[in-house]
Length: 60
Image (cartoon, rainbow, N blue to C red; front, side, top):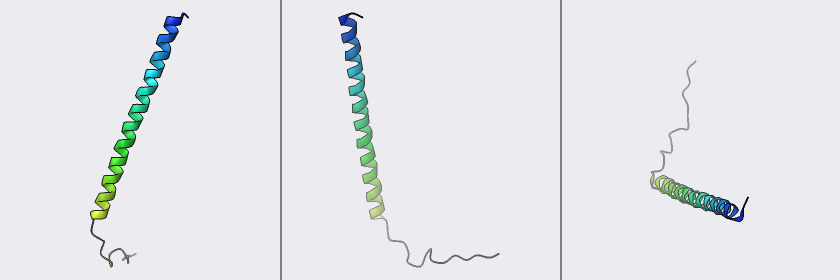
């Protein structure tokens, strides 16, 4: 393999790695935003009624 072809191959590999890292970074940002939104949603919810879910009526 000549030097030019090797250089092109190495450049393509570096580009692929950079793109993969950029995509992974965007995915992490998106997940952090989703976690923050879910946390805010849960904090804004009203507290459940204290008597609900304490007893189960079962008939056999």
